[in-house]
Image 1 (cartoon, helix red, strand yellow):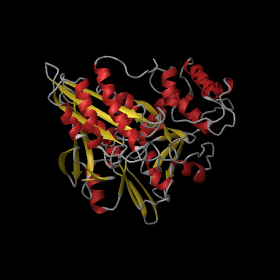
Image 2 (cartoon, rainbow, N blue to C red):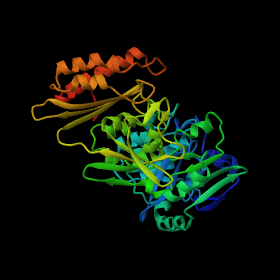
Image 3 (cartoon, rainbow, N blue to C red):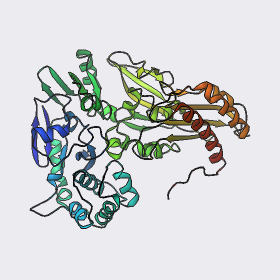
Image 4 (cartoon, rainbow, N blue to C red):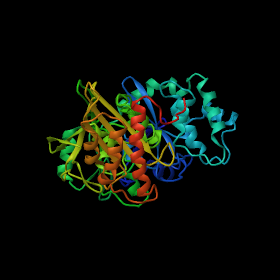
Length: 474
């Protein structure tokens, strides 16, 4: 049985298929129709709700897309929808700000925007225009326009966060801690499990080798919402504490495979450009659920993080029935959406070597729009330089340029053993077409991808010599 708080009401859910989304459960089972369905793919934000969870001695508010958050993911948490905000006929300050600033016209997108701004105000500071823009990047509004919505955000930020949710935080925390740690969801022969340890997870996979694993579900859930596929057996990973680890060691970072991007961002900012890359990975709602391990295991050729991990020479800890092996991510991808994972094996954690003083690193993502878009090309480059400025080693990796995320061996060789200068870049640019043979698709042509990859090497040279190659807003 799945148990969660819907506002202050305890919900015990069973008899729903594992692929049931939170959105469908709210609307079809509980008649909470304030939450809207727009794209059913996590792109428009109309279905945004807030998940509240215990975070030490406080609460954490996460805005998520209800359309691709499967029901099992809310076990042990509190779900807040737009119906919960007003009190005694009085609008919540977020709702009132939207009214005062004329932030709504047709109103279809408004519940999602209200819930997003509610979670944003309950998040740690700062609450300013930049953080509001970042938060709202996953919420589309076709008729009002964003200026009045940002005006509402400014009004909200100027007010103290002293609503009844803040006042009742201790009570909510106590009630969440009373909920059982493990849970199941069953509908006939279909079943979902929520293990709380690696040993439980190993046991479930031994007994149900056909089960699909789900962490954030920002990709897997699309099989249900877009392709209408059932999930006969599903195992949720986000309650397995070992898969949520984040450890900083002298030589490397260790990140649990099911830790959400939003909880990795601060640690990964030590690698130049990765923080900016993650802020462009989907929307805030996606980053609150999506995970590093999922991005790797999906083996998408356009995943944002695999090129970074290839260039940094990351390693993966893989686990099966209690046995752990460690492999390089270089070689993990063996074909289109195919990896060397064995049946019953899964990614436990990712080990990322920390940069040393003589190493330079950068990553660039090219897409049709800056926020909430899929890469046409993502390139990561690590250079090892000696005291004389000679490149002693180079690792260059690209996404969107082949059937898998791929290193450019010839391009790397063209950079080694010489200064990183115009001549080296010219040689590397000439090697790019021999390493990569991209295809034409809706995002970009093969010719465009090759040219941009070559230009990104030129950008790397310009910025290495402290000449900015891109205009960025302050």
